[in-house]
Length: 215
Image (cartoon, rainbow, N blue to C red; front, side, top):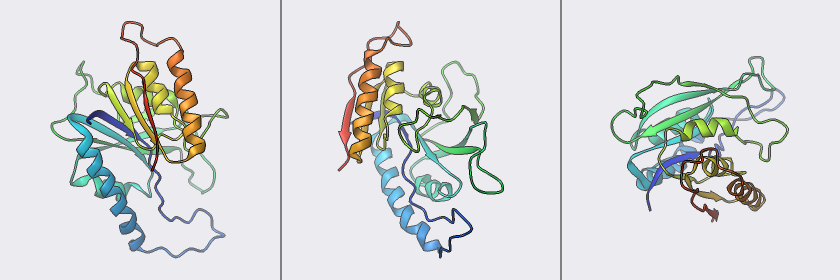
């Protein structure tokens, strides 16, 4: 099986000091253990991607160095910044963005109309309607899918927003989720999206999605 694009937000699982009241020992060995997991992921991404395909992988400032190293031998990469337009909770300098690693195999991707696009993407985060703590806004994923082919894989689909975006844009979708709770939510949201009128009526009906529980 080959896909035209991978659009996903994997779990990072990297120790971090989230609050000053906590004491935690961190060593560089933490990163090497996590990096081995990401290396196996990126090998699989490279295996299933078409030669002209691409991947968009969400990360943050702590996980980016690990994810970049893991992807380096498999892909050419560039860094995108999702500007949320508002600050989060916690530190003195609070996060108002997330990072997206853009990966491809050969050549420099050029959008079909030859227009260049900014690498800072400004989209509001999901509000009270969120179904998953790491849920991404639908308009952001729709924007990224504009640069992708017809068959999309999300191996960490969470609440299924990538699948919803694919349904609305006429893309074939393959999604995998290990947590039963979120798998059920994703299936319901994606099935509902496929029953709604398409955003672009000139395209063929969106292919039926393949939704797989994780192993």
